[in-house]
Each structure stands twice: as C-alpha cells, then as structure tokens.
Length: 453
Image (cartoon, rainbow, N blue to C red; front, side, top):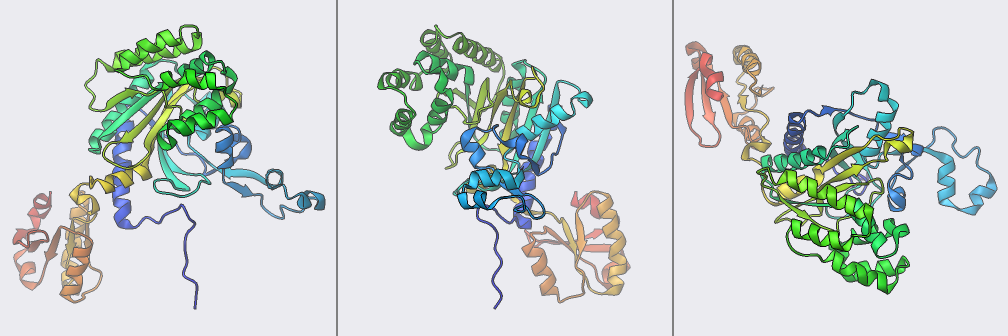
C-alpha cells in the first residue's frame, strides 16, 4: 500500500476556502499600502548566505534554512573534515545560498544593488513567503507570509507616524481591535549605559523582549546568565515597570536617562512621534512599552509591535527604524523604517474571532444549471456578458442530475443559481434562485447583470 503523502512540519496547505479569506487579508493590506504611495516589489525566495548571515543576531542565524550547493557538493570536502562532524563548519563549505528569513534584508540588498535606478525616498511594499527553521507551535510556522512596507532614504519621523497610520487603517478595515506598542532602541541603549553595561545591549534587549512570554523572574535569571550583576539588574527593575500615561513615562525616563545622550535622543524621537499622533483621530491604542526590544539587531530607532486584543496570539505586526542596514552592503547613510504584517497570524486571529465577512468564501456569484446542449448555446453568451460586467459566473460543465448541480452550488456557497430550460429560452428570461432564501424569480436576460449587482 502506498504511503500517504504529507508536508513538512510548520507548513500548511491552503484550500480554496482558506485562500479566499487570505486574499481578503492581502487585498485589504495592499489597498492601504497603495493609498499611502507605496510601490510593489518582489525578490527571490533564496539569497546568498553572505547576504543573510549576521543580519539577525546569533539566534536568527541559527534559524536560517540553508540550501545545499548543486552537483557533487561533497567532492571537495576532505575525509578529515567529514570525520570532525562539525556541522556548522561543514554547512558553510557545502552551502552558499539560503531561503530568506524576512523581507527587510533582501530589500536592503535590492536598494544597494539598484541604487542608481531608485528615486529616494524609496517607498515599497512586498508580500511574499519567508522561512525560518523554528520549532513549530501555535501561531509559529516554518513557512509564512509577510506583508512588508518600508521607506528608505529619509530620516524624517513623519515616516514612523505614517506607518502607525497604516497599521490603524489596516486593522480598522479588517475590524480587528489591536494595541500598538512602541519603544526606541536608543532608549534601550541608554538604559544599558545607565545600568553600567553598554557592551551588553544585545543580551539585555534579547532578554527583556521575552518579558511577556517568560515573565520578569525568568528575564532576570537570563540576565544573570549573561553576566549582569545583581546591582545592575536591580537598577533595571523600576525602568521596566514604569507606569502612567505615555507622556508620564517619557518624563520619568528623562530623569532616569539624564546622563545618557543616546537615551535622551531616543526620548526626543518618541516625544516627537507622540506629538504628531496626538493631532490625529486613531482608533488604535498606542502604548509606550519599555520591555519591547525586538530581537533583530539591525533596529536603531523606533520599534513597533502590534498585538490583537481578545485573542491568544503573539505579535501580528512588527518593525522599526534601521539606520545601518544598507551600510552592511556598502551604502552608507541611508536610513530606513518599515513594518511587517504577519498574514498567517492575522488569519488565525480573524478565524478565532469570526471576523471574516459572510461572503468571504464566495467567489462565484451565479451558477447556470446545465440542462443540455441547446441550453448551453443559450447560456454561454449570457455568461460572457456577465463576466464583461465584472460578475463572477460559471456553468456546470455537464448536464448532470439537478440534485448534483444544486449540491455543487450549495457547497461552493454560490448565492444565485440560474435555471434556463425551453420555456425560459422562448421567453428570453432566466429563472433565478436565491440559494439563501430559496426565492425564485424570473428575470429578463437583459436585466440579469443589473439585478445581480
């Protein structure tokens, strides 16, 4: 007996019913991106490892899917190298490419490679899959789609404000209640300076970024493991637990970080962003959260994270400013800022909260029942006319039993069925059945498109 086929863990098939809902999310996000003047871009699924390695921190590098070189990739490997069983060293010798981990680093590579063709500030959106060799669990997949929007070539904080507006508009259209958390890596750098460990910024940010997942005590334990003293950890506690409004937190931070120019610069940037946002009527709650660190090492300024309310799910959108990313590829002094919408997590949350429109599964608007060749000849021009009017229409391909055809329409959630027999042909009408109410009405063929609209 043949073995039942399967797919790799952490990946998913998307049935037509699911794809219709996913496309609803993609189309909504894309329409908002375009509203703000962003242009589409696509990059290859695989990149050179030299492009990817070292851009995501030590933990991120471990999650890269690497691709074996073509041909006999072991031919130049010595027996001694094989006998060492050093998988990391061996992989570096037999693999030159990898699947992209996110869309931001490939975007930075594109900007550097095509800088002479680009008009700056360069605003692009990108909706493509990414891959991470992570342990699959609820809300975490090895293959998933990101919907990225970035602008490079501008230092203006108006870009941060615009991205927050985009977040607000996307989730307003999706009818999903969310909270946007904001912080600044300069503030985090200032905190690291203030507690006496500026050289351990990465260790500190990676640890505190796990606060909502593992809790304060476990974060403190991880900081101890990284070499921080009890005195430093003690200094950190009141900073991470600052209360009050966003303005009150900023005021308290000015006192705490008064000896750190870097930290004060971050506070100044956050203050400016909030001053812009206070002039706008946004429905999204925006909260300054000092435990927000985002582990990716390329962020240098504002950082964002969006979480759905009333749903058990981690971050569904995240991003921030990166001043040095293109510099890694040789293009200095090009600042950028962007955010990424996690389409798979958004889908899971909307499914959990039953937020998809009732007609989200509807692709075909009307099905013509097939009674035979004569009726087919009559219906085909009508189908052509409806499609020209932008109405999704189909005809059952065979003159099968009526029950079979109606079951087909019902399972596909087609709202209208057209019944055209000899009498209807003579009178130039269509007997139109509403599959929801069961009501059946005779409609002139010349009025069918208008009626369906």
